[in-house]
Length: 76
Image (tube, rainbow, N blue to C red; front, side, top):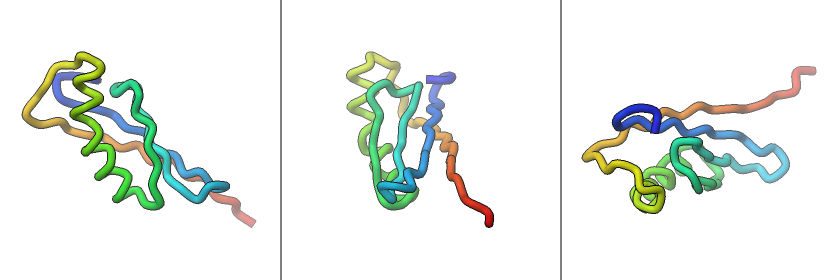
């Protein structure tokens, strides 16, 4: 993780599939998708404890997630 209890998560919108995809360099193995960023963030928070344990990362009472959102648009 970036520092003490911070985790950066990247959200990328897949135009073809119509879903948001979450990945993170701080949580190896995190690859989730959902139709909305809000639902995706809930899924990230739910998956985080197991990924922290599997990656032997320090356990904190709280983790601050920082989401970076990537979208593309065609301007005509």
